[in-house]
Length: 215
Length: 215
DNA sequence: CCAAAAGTGTTTCACTTACACCCATGA
DNA sequence: TCATGGGTGTAAGTGAAACACTTTTGG
Image (cartoon, each protein chain N blue to C red):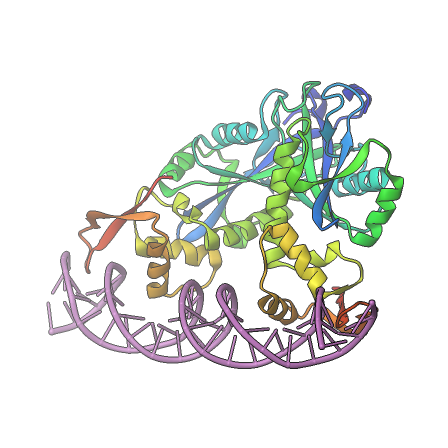
């Protein structure tokens, strides 16, 4: 191995797949590109990694800059490095996915420039670069993840009903889920606690609220 | 987004966790570093990504250069990008893991410079950089992987006995595996075919050979 | 008393685990 | 005939899936 500078250095970006649940649908935040290449095309938010920040930190910074939220679920997905993926030159993209809950999502909506918008994941526009591939992969990972872990809670406000949680699963998996089996499975995980509150004033039996047990 | 060159650019390397089974143990290929930093310390093989090659291709090239094998199982693991992980400067490492079967491994042994050696994964020396973390992660992934998929075959020669395959599982998982249940599970996967050959001339009933059904 | 969603148990089926003996061969 | 690893089946237990009715509330 020689000096670092002997080697031509690619640019490194992080690209974010930011998911939320809204309007009974799984949404991803997209940015309309203002310049070439792919001017006018929708793209995943992202940006260059600063020379002195970690990848995770770069992802968190982008999240804050572009969306205005902090402290959300963030996980590295995969690194895409095809030499031709960016026509401007060699750009390696480390992709992350983030889950933004319904509460924080309102902040995002407020900060929405005309060029940033939530789009249905299942009816997304054509994307710039190889971002369609990244999005597909993120959806695949999210689906696996909610089956084996408890990340689903990250998409809901602090207090939620089991029906709301079930709906999140149905939206992500795009298939109906059995109510009784779902409740059994979720409760058996021991990750959520029953609150002494209900979501009241509805024209039917009010639903009990639950909360995620942190850590 | 501005011009690419406006941004200070990190170096990007690929680091390889190359596994094989030998001497009834899971081994990883390590290189003894000839220069600072970490001179004399063992490290994962790796190198810089060329400006016009994909990450996967860079990994395959390293594999060929350092180990002399091609066409082996190769999978991207994770990208490590802590700003301080390399004292020389900002180096982002895209890690891959590779599985080298017993046949090809002999080629490796032949090409072994004094500075490249197979080490037991479970009794590895202190590693340079953050390579211990990378190795741990690779072992974790390999363990998960063999439980859900059929990558185990990648560590064996084309023809193998079920006992040999079982031993691979036991070595990787570091726990005994029930013979009858193992055989049931493997055969049920429908991925291997029974050959009309046995491993003969042993002082006991000869074992039937099997072969992996490609694709 | 009606409409609407909340809440609740049991049976079936598939899959995993535990477990012990006979078989084929070379020496 | 002995030593050695190869090869085989069954029963019990665990977890997933299917499935329908009663409860609570507001209007």
